[in-house]
Figure 1 (cartoon, rainbow, N blue to C red):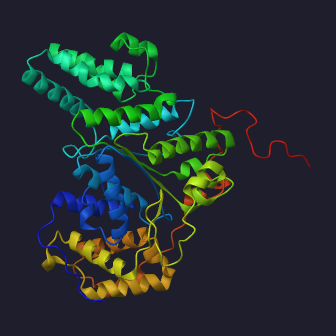
Figure 2: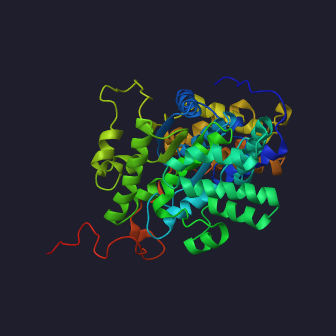
Length: 451
């Protein structure tokens, strides 16, 4: 291995701490990803093409597939940061038993509310940007009203007119118009109620009617329709479009009830059809999942025939050949060379960007990789989460114990191959499985089996 040339310049303490603490906990850092990004240049270029298509008024959808611990969440965060730089607005959330694409018990509304809490712009990359987005739309309307010398409300309603043709668009436009009234009259409670409605925080139509005079709310049935509405509204506000990042798709795969699982897969199919056919405007989706979630013909996406036909891989694809034009993108494995560069970057970040403060020399990186390869084989760079965590822990011990030699510690590093806890049998959980509120009482694959 040769020495790695890293960018010069100090790393901000805030970025350093965010990266180090996140990696030690085994989670993806929210900021500073650019300091540790390695490899996968082709995949990033393909997603950049999707982002440009969304910014041009088109639509895109991708399923990012990779093994547990292979870096899917990191890749999704990297794509989000690129989208923000291209003037897109991003929302992101992890699917869970309480957050789904389709439900009748409030889980889809819960997912929408989580997405809106994480709504981010380039000026507010850490979420909570809904008020500033609406303010930007109002400010653009005021500027146009001044230039045309007409009433601001007239211009605002004219700009909102194109939303009324969409499902739920009339009430959405009325809510935005109410924000202008709150802005004009200084009614802070009305302004707060508008933001609550846009974030899907109203649970009943009665409360919505009392607060805003509209008879609808964002609920389970209107989850996807309001995402399309929001994408159109963001373009009116001066942004390029909306990118939706949904991770942990394995939680749909884990659903035990066939009817509930298929209902969620139908929503995935609807999103896929709209984005591939160009029916959505300025809207893109990136899903993160595992190979089992995709390929399992009993419970995965391939168990739904319409999805299997749309997500089937190119039949001409062979080992050594790539095709990144389809909706399914399999994350390429990191090579040992990529892992060496990654360890060098982690050492650089830990030192705050100061080469004189490096805690280990280049030969320590090679020795660490050799030790990991002896323990778990090539899994140490194919699913590198544990490897990264152990290396950061090693640097932390060396930092706090200046008299210790790195060569005395490397052989003590305990590392095991990644296993996906999501695919363990249900009986291994801490408690009995909870019933699904939206499933029929006898919705089970073996309900009619008799001995």
